[in-house]
Image (tube, rainbow, N blue to C red; front, top):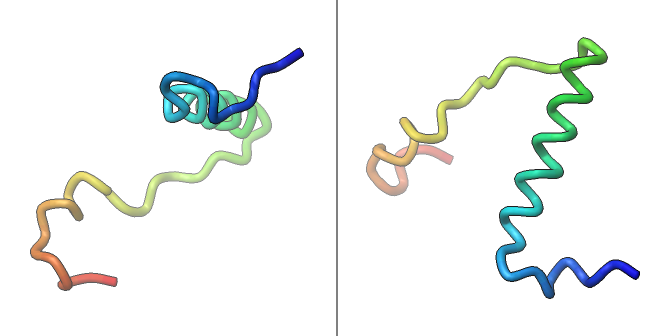
Length: 51
């Protein structure tokens, strides 16, 4: 029996694994898309300058 997702000590880690798996499947099927936003660059913008 699987344990609930919330019971994991670090649920973000499990989510990253799932998203990585989905990315791999999308690439294998030729359905991957390039990243259009660089999140790290957005983090350095002043608060309220983008929506």
